[in-house]
Image (cartoon, rainbow, N blue to C red; front, side):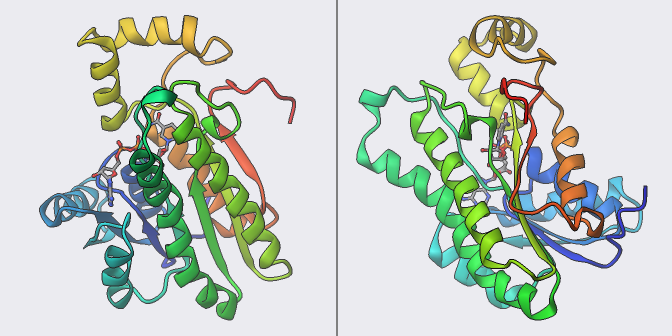
Length: 262
Ligand code: NAD
């Protein structure tokens, strides 16, 4: 299927590894001009180089900026005034007991996971509306609608993302701009490997995966961690002209964890 993405420009926040990297590589493979973002200049350049080596002819430009801060966003905008596609992928996660989560932690999660996407969308949406075409995709989580008791602070930010995404879609009704959220479930990324190492005390990943799907996420239908490319495939479709009637939606790619008919 040709996703008709040739020459569209796409910014993917936090795309030097994990789901963001897979999305950037998939969009590059589909002919997009991708802007790869991370905080570290060297790592960001290395990620763009890697995309060019994995996808012959790829147009990948590194832009280093810490998008969890207003200063980082302000640094990025003059370098990239407009994009056709914005993927708000930046997000952190960490299990912390509710009673141990202080104000600073709640603020940090809100700042990184929610405000980063708000700021980027506030900047890029007016141009999309003027050109009467654009795509904004928030990478939320299944945790937006099934709040994990060990990460209430995280679930809250993911619920906020789908609320913002729906509200924004309403605000651009009747234009060629669509705004959606994508809800991945457990996906094997560097961040998750670190998380697993921390909570399992160094147990091997396969053992953790088996126990995790038996006891922590027993409603999963796939009973495995997804590959980041599986999330990237849905994201690329929703970012494409082909998905023109999909807007205001929360699209699940979570292995069926959420027991819901729609
Ligand atoms: P990850 O932890 O593997 O990290 C991805 C990248 O984010 C890294 O390259 C890191 O350098 C970069 N990064 C971190 N802070 C940054 C900042 N302030 N500015 C710029 N870059 C920064 O991430 P992931 O697991 O791929 O998750 C990506 C998104 O998907 C997040 O929003 C996450 O909440 C969501 N998600 C992940 C999973 C999962 O199981 N991995 C499940 C559901 C939702």
